[in-house]
Length: 553
Image (cartoon, rainbow, N blue to C red; front, top):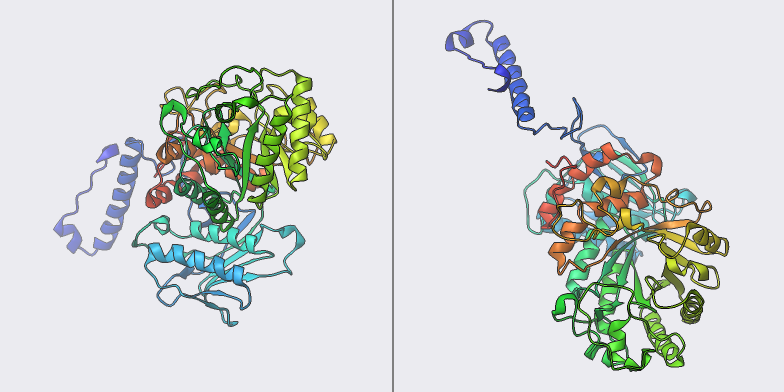
C-alpha cells in the first residue's frame, strides 16, 4: 500500500476479546491508506489545487448557476417512487404544460410513471404552484423551492419562474437524471430551501448558423443545453458572407443562390418559415426568446451573390465566398433599392418573430465612411421600429444608439466604438449587453493547443470566461448593463459535436455570470460545482472538453 501502510489481521487477533478494537483500527488504517493512494495518483477528492480537506460538493452546492440562497433542511429528503405525482392547480394550462414537460424528462431516466394531476391540498410528490403573494423582488423569473421528506414544492409569481425552478430541481437529482434511457440511481432530493432570482434580465447565447448551417434539430439540441442553465435568449446569426439562412417571400434567390454553400465550400442550407417557427416554438416552451440577426451593411456577400444590383461596384455578381475574412462586402448604402430590400426582409422577419428584438448587426464595416455608416444604420433601425421591434446591434452602432435609434447594443470589442461612445448611447436611452470577445466568445481557443476555434481575441480558459463582472468591464453608467451574451461563431465548427467541445464547460460559466449575484460567485467554488456537471453531460450524451483547470470526477 502507499505511504508505507500495511495491515495484517490474524485469526488469533480476531478471536481475542479485543477483536472489535482491532477491526476498527484496521478499517481506519485502510481508509487512510486509500486516501494516500488517491493523492499519490493525483486523484485527490478535492481535485488539483483544491487544498487539504476539500470535498466535492453535493446537493444544492452542485447547482449551476448558483442560487441566490439555499439552506439545508433536516431529515432524509424526498425520494421519487412509483407513487410520486407531479401536481398543479386546476385552471392553469401553462403550469400544467410545464409539469408535463418536467414529468416527461424525469420518466425517461427514472422509469417511474410520474403522472401529472391536480393539486388537492395534500402534501407529497412534486407540486408546481403560482403564488402572486411572493415578494415583488422575486420578479418574473424568480422562484422558491422546498424539499423535505414529504415532497418538493416550487412556487413563483409567473410560469417562467416555475420553469426556472424545475431546472434547479433537475440538478438536485442525481446526474443520471439526464440519461436518455432508464437508469438506476437513488432518486432522492436532499432537504433544502432555495430562494432564487436572476441578476440580469437578458442572458443570451448566440449561435452562428451562417458560416456553417445547423439543422432545426441541432438548434433545438443547443436550446436544451441553454435551458438547463437558465439562459433566456437565443440569438441566431442568420446571415453572413458565407450564407443566407432564411427564406424570404418574394426573394427566391436568397435561398436558391445565397444559401447554397457554407464556409469551406460544402453545401449550406436554409430555414423555411415553418422551420423558423418550429425553432421559435421549441425555444418559447423552454422560456428562451429568439433574437434573429440579419447582419448589415457588411457581412453581406451571400445576399449580393443573389441580388448583385445591391452592390455599389456595378461590376459582375460577386462569387460565393468560402473563406473566413471579414470587412470586404458592403450592401450599397446610397441606392434606394437597398432600403426596399432591407424593409422587406425586416418586415417579414418581424412578422414571424414574437420576441421584442431584431438584431441588425453593424460590425466590421471597413469600406464605408462613418457618416455613411451612421446614416445607413439610422434608416434601417427606423425600419425595425416601424415593424414593432427594438433594434439591436453590435457596439459599432453606438453612435446611433438610443431610444430613437439602436435600443440595445452588444459590446464585443473596442474596435470601432469606444467606451465613451457606448456611455453616450446609454445617455440617449440605449442599454448594453456585454459579450467581450476575450471573455465571452466561445469560439476562442481554450489555450494554444486547442485544435478547434480561433485566437484573434486571445485564448479564453474557463477561468477567464468566469472571472469578470459585466458591470465593471466598461466604464458605463449604473444600470446600463441589461445582461450578458455568449456568442459562438462557427468558422471552425461544422457540427454540434464541435459546438459542444467549445461551449462546454464555458457556457455554464457565462450562465452563472448572468444569473448569480456577483457576491455569490467565486472561482474556487465554481470549479468544484462545474466539475459536478461533467457526469450530467456524460449521462445526456453531450460532448465536452475536460479542461485540466476543472477537477472532474
